[in-house]
Length: 473
Image 1 (spheres, one colour):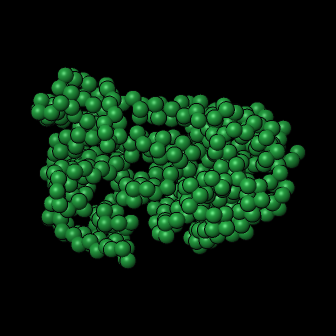
Image 2 (cartoon, helix red, strand yellow; image 1 turned 30 degrees about the vertical axis):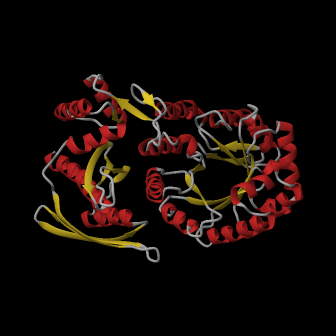
Image 3 (spheres, helix red, strand yellow; image 1 turned 180 degrees about the vertical axis):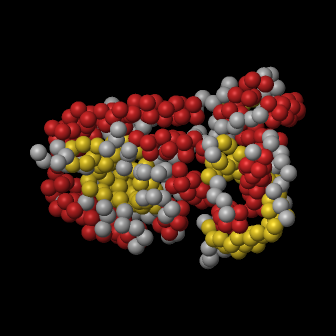
């Protein structure tokens, strides 16, 4: 009996950052943990846009995901993008860099302001730069079904010759039928001989509600990788395509490693995370210049406020609940509303205040646009002086790494927020750091005109709470 070929399934639920902006730092990490349990080959993340926050998110996801490969796209036009993305991604158990190019004439000129020859040259150069860092490089031909056929064949050959391991063809508009999808993929595999040396993948949107059928048609035509989503029904459904392949795959000589038995339970949990992200708490309002957030008011009960604390992930003691309720009530009386972020800051400032095990913090941080960030941290642990020196992706990341080296402890970063407290050139900045340790959440707050200093204070504040609980028990 012939051995069945493996279909690689990539989860792209978090690929489109704009559609999931309402997901918190913690929710994105938890979603990736769930998806990892399914046995997908790859988890696709969105590229780096907000440098500090997105790099920390990628690093945190790399620490949380134990099995799947983590894939992140790089920019074709930003010179530092490849190196910066790889630095954030390199600690993953398995990592992949993605080169995404809009290959239809309209999109390449509108999005990148490039002509076909310039785009092909840029794609080749970027792929080769990625290959200098990792063997796992994917080329994604966005809007491939509306590309000029001759140019599409040329750029696919260029990508294959540059050394990619996977080429994904995208029906971004989602307007092809299953029959057209089959013919499209089959023809390219015949007309571009170089494709025989790479894994051919497929992705399509669900504009005509035919995404799952088109995905199976692509597999029949020779595609051996699919990008699907575990929640939100606007592209290939992970649950549906896995079920289709489990029933029909053997007739096409293929199978997938994704577990059919747990698919419904885990994708159901993923759906709950995505759904609850858009419906947190009691009421939501769209505020100009801000993302949608939970709104609490003076009329909300203590039970409602404590439920909001649970939504943030906190397990508060009865004593801390009373502290939070008191400060919340005072805050709500002075202003009309209290947002979820403001409640998070109240918790960080009021809950579980402890004698500091780590104190007398001194630090020096060197950074610039021509050198990487380096932090030297000295602090006291009770009566013992300790120190650490570490580099990082920016001043804050280097500072956190140096604290970990000094303390000899690694804590999972659950969330990192920067908030403005006052206005002007000497504005006070507030940072909230949330660390997860043995399944429990600990938060710390720091306030300073130096945002790096505020971040260090917040991180140490959260660590002290962890150490206090350990030493008490």
